[in-house]
Amino acid sequence: MNSERVLVFENIDEFFGNVAKLLGRARQLCDKLRDNVVEHAIIGKYREPPSSIKLAAIDTAFPMYPLELVSLAVSVIGYASIVVENDVVVEKYTGYKVIAGLGKLDQDIVAAYAREIERHIAEKLVSSGFNGIIIFDGEVVPIACRHSKVPESWARVCRLTERLLDYKNVLVGIVKRSFSFTLSRKLGLKMPDKAIMSLVLRRGEYAIVEKFANDRCLVVYYKPLKGLQQAIKVEVCGGVDQYRVSEIIGLLISSAASTGLPWYVDFVDGLAKRETQLLDLISSRLLRTAVEVETEQLVEPTNPQKT
Image (cartoon, rainbow, N blue to C red; front, side, top):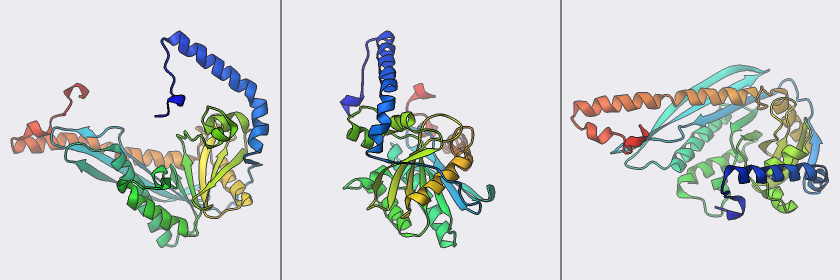
């Protein structure tokens, strides 16, 4: 944990007093901030995308906590993908995987399996001849794959991601929860890059902030024309130039739902989450199975206070 980014307050009045100062200072910085950001980022205006763009959206979902029992822990990964042509869903694919651990089930392992499923779906699409844009709900290149030493649980995900980057398809990742400080460090500020770009960008604008993955990917922030006023972070991979980036941002902006996110990202997110409701069914069936063999104590919650 970075202690510089964690503040502890004695009471609620102290908290709100400091927050008021922080927000006020951000407002004062706003005008100067744009000039400073221009020195480190390329700011542009979106372009109307071609009407014939074909895209696929892919997402997975899993419960925040697994079902933790005396003898094992269980979770469900729901997955979904859709193909969209002319703003209409023409293909839909959903399903789920049950994942169990004997004892503890680390959520990082569940997350790695979820990302692996997404990349398998993307690879199947490409292998079937799909040549459109592939959009992930999340990073194109997972954070774990950018470390010099990749954790063992993420090794397969990283290999699959590398393979995807070698294809000709443009890959886009919609990063909803972003806490990067790359631009912040360059500007000497202590606020996330997303907060900076939310202050700086005007609706319909985007900013290319950095390149990564051997210059095959770009980090871009954009502010939608409607919905929330916060900037949205995306990763764009596939050797695209600024003109192509402006078209891709135009595609995302033109298909924004009330959240500000593209409607197909919200749609595929809902499909994937629906699959995770199976966890309640698994719990009741496990209990019935254990009762039949007189070992119900093994499928009781390991922490009764959480029931």
